[in-house]
Length: 106
Image (cartoon, rainbow, N blue to C red; front, side, top):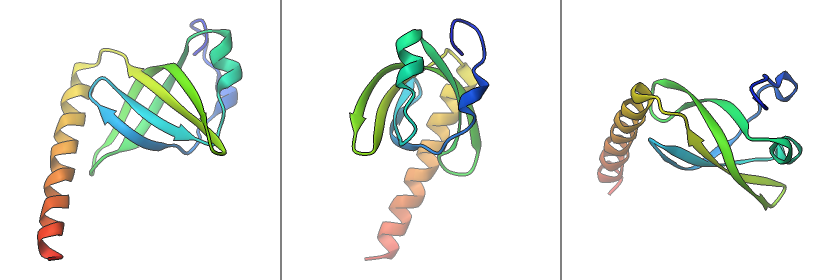
């Protein structure tokens, strides 16, 4: 959203999560949102899976940095208590699976 108005022109685009916490994320995309960010604060709706559950969160892009063929973005999630708990739970489940798999591969 820009100034409270939805921007449908962006549609959906693939991104990579580089770092995540219950409060926000750092992501990479080859899609550049720079022209939108320069006009106003850009809110984005994110949909991602950390382990098994699809998480939908609303956030605001607060910084961007050119990186390779795309850009990295810092996103702060809006206060969404259920999202905080879901992200923590999914991160724990994923980490347990990673540890178990590492033990099996020894």
